[in-house]
Length: 119
Image (cartoon, rainbow, N blue to C red):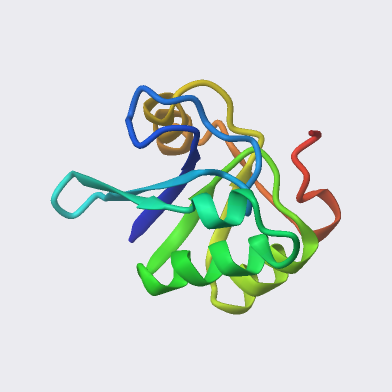
């Protein structure tokens, strides 16, 4: 069960990026060996269209089963749900803090009517 977290920099100390598709980095955590790696998502940052769907494909390609972000658009939401990826929104603080909030159950799973996380 890999977890993706949107980030402003490729670091655990980086702040969460509140946008899914336009986040410059996706941090991927693998709890089976407690490892991290980052994926450059900077093309989505400047994309005119389709940033959320492109980021969703990157997440699915990494076999991620849950994503943590601030907010997610409707097209990315539907793409991730079709791939059985859980979406947790409303995350704040650093990447490490967001993972801790997820692990302690402090993040809400998004539903289609509330995928923006209040942002």
